[in-house]
Image 1: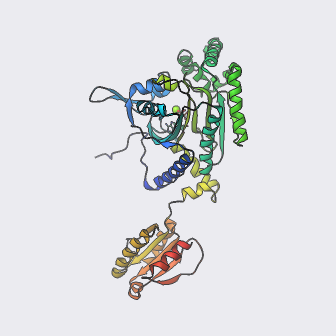
Image 2: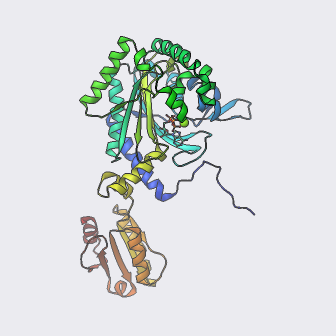
Image 3: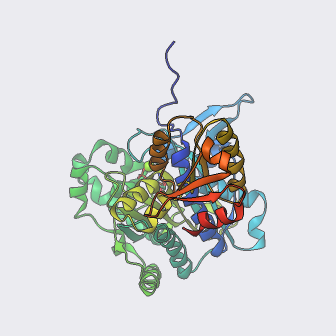
Amino acid sequence: MSQLQSLRGMVDLLPEALQRWQAVEAVAREHFQRSGFGEIRTPLLETTDLFCRGIGAATDVVGKEMYSFQDRGDRSCTLRPEGTASVVRAALQHGLLSQGAQKLWYAGPMFRYERPQAGRQRQFHQIGVEWLGAESARSDVEVIALAWDLLARLGVGGLELELNSLGSSEDRQAYRAALVHWLEQRSEALDPDSQARLSTNPLRILDSKNKDTQALLKDAPTLADALSPESRQRFEAVQQGLTALEIPFRLNPRLVRGLDYYSHTAFEITSDRLGAQATVCGGGRYDGLIAQLGGATTPAIGWALGMERLLLVLEASAEVDPEGRAAGLVAASLPDVFIVNRGVQASAAALALARDLRGNGLVVVLDDSGSAFGKQFKRAHRRGARWALVLGDDEAERGELRLKPLQQSGEERCIRLDDREALVAILKSL
Ligand code: ATP
Ligand code: MG
């Protein structure tokens, strides 16, 4: 019988990786709490209509990437491809916005039918924030700083913040007309995808990965030239705010989100350590979305970062700087104690000892192979334990155990098995 496999692009997370994930999530959770963002959890499955209205039928996500199906009640359902639409739906459904602005964060799996490659999966995970009711330029700065500082706290290096302004919807309408006019005169030079977008989603052409299209676009009219004085002023205020916080950024006039309810600030945080899938975090202002989903016109801004890509840059950062925070997070799961034990009496005493030490908050590996001490010691080193405790029948007979530091130099010593207080104090001292 052939071996069963997970679906393409659907990835198992095994214990070793999950410890890193949980360390990252713990930092993120605390980070959001400090800034007054509350967690929200929404269903993985929503009506297809939510995403058609909330992301837009002209986008790749809705047009090509959704996992949609009819359920047994013949409703069209979709596995969520992103978090924003669901968060806004939930806020409207529960009347949260009538209580004032809402600062929310979420974490969890998203589903997109894409071609799997490094940093790109069909089930992937995001951590994101949405600040509903945030209007000022300062809120843009605060939200961007929230992402930037989280990545800094995690010790991720080599990051670049790219920034653009999409202006108001009037600015964009004028710009869209100018861009389409310019591109139509050169449409034979466009790649087929971009040709199709000329009528459906022309702004998205700016984002094309096609080299020839990119070269052509160098001379195209830019969004920056189309901004009204008010929009320009707002964009400048955001830039000044970031400068005041000493957050470096690079203006990227090609950075766009294709849909009308996006406006003003758009940003991405990229890493030079990721290869082709360089964007770790993307976000921006979506002042038109809440009205689009049936609420009162409410300004809002948010971002989402990809966990898989974050973990890739975190591991790369840990390698570059073995003493840094990233390395600390990656290594956070090493055991405190490895109990080397062999013999009938010793193994019973070792189990009781392991239970006791765990009860005192220590992470304990109890070897259950019964193999030679040398072999067990090798395993203790491989696991990266800080201490080895050695318990053979001789030691058990004498009511003693031997204690040896593995990560630092230091003599092996003996200690009474029943003096748990002294033992715990020593184990916690390193
Ligand atoms: P990309 O251009 O890489 O497809 P996107 O613009 O589709 O990204 P967003 O919808 O802005 O991405 O999602 C925010 C973040 O989620 C991305 O920056 C990325 O880190 C992550 N992400 C998006 N799609 C995937 C995927 N298929 N697999 C893994 N991570 C993803
Ligand atoms: Mg994508």
